[in-house]
Every structure is written in structure tokens, then in C-alpha cells.
Length: 148
Image 1 (cartoon, helix red, strand yellow):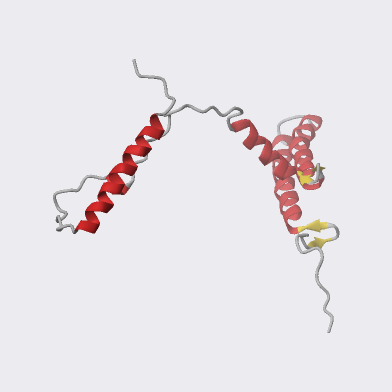
Image 2 (image 1 turned 90 degrees about the vertical axis):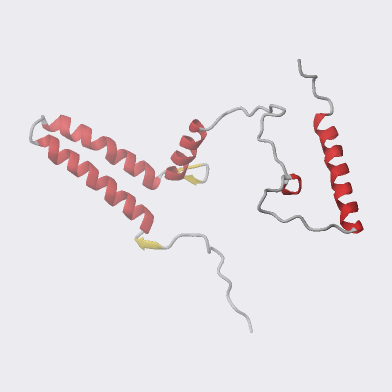
């Protein structure tokens, strides 16, 4: 038996004509803001000025709704642009600039902990851990300039 496999599973559903729900919401909010600006300014200012001021958010709303830049919707492009402008452009490496990580096996015991009697096998494990700690200390300080 053969079944049809959907091909465009990531495409948003069209609600009204060619508009998706997200586009309808953006148009509704932007149109509402533009209308509120027009109504507030039309009472006190000249008609041309109030229409001009209300036209700015409406045009931005149209751009957010319909423009696609390199296959990316304009609203996502604006968010990516703001992220790019707010983050660092160059990353630098500073040796020893990070927090020092100390594993719990090297942590000092508190007075609340009970000291158990260690067998010969456990003592050899602690010797190995001490040697491992010394090796890591040598590797961490390798090729670093001496402290003055």
C-alpha cells in the first residue's frame, strides 16, 4: 500500500488568502498602532502631518509582513541584525583568564565528613589521583611566561 508523504511540513498554513496567522497578527498590531497615532494626532495637527506620522509604523508593519531578505523573513532579519549589533565582534583568548576549575576529588574534606579506614587498593587510587594532579599542573603551566 502506498501513502502520500507531506513534502512541505515546515510551511505555515494560510489563513486568509496568502496570509498566515503570524502575518495577520503583525498586520493587526501595526495597523492598530498606526490608526491610534492618526486618531490622536488628527485632532490637534494638520491632516498631512498626522497621516505622515501614522504612515511610518504602517510601512514598517508592511515590511515586517511581506519582505523576505535572502530567504529570511524581515522580522527574523531584524532580530538577527539586533543580535549582531549587540554582541562582540571579536573574540580574544586570554590564557588563564577563565575561572579555575577544581574537581571534587581534590576538594578538602570538611569536619562533618567521617574519615574511613582505607584499604591498600584505595590508597593506590589516591596515589594515582595525586600523580594525575601533578601531571595536570605541569601541563597547565607548560609554555607560560614566568611570573615576575
